[in-house]
Image 1 (cartoon, rainbow, N blue to C red):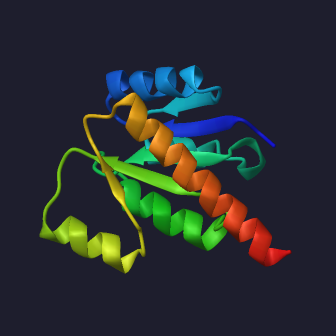
Image 2 (image 1 turned 120 degrees about the vertical axis):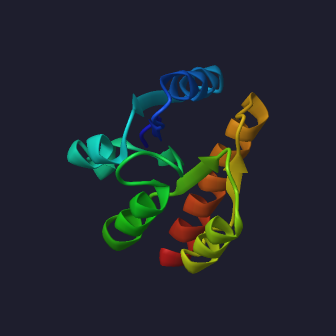
Length: 129
């Protein structure tokens, strides 16, 4: 199984911080600055999961979730955001997203994102066998 995790954030310092946290817990981060860049270079066999910011120029985190649900539903996506409002809460429900992790991002929240995604992967695998 791959140990690479795709990180998408338009703020380079946030992407680098999450990448450093992932390295600390034994994963290989691949950091990109936009959903467009990530999708242009996306190979589902390379990534265990995706961590992405919600609010970015161009395509946003919900656009990414829509694409992943339609094309690669087995790859978990963890969304992060420093901004929450009623519209974002409604979109979270529409897309069936259990949780949007809040910025600022800390090591414990990255551990939680990875753990939640691995549990989701294990559950999907167990029920599809």
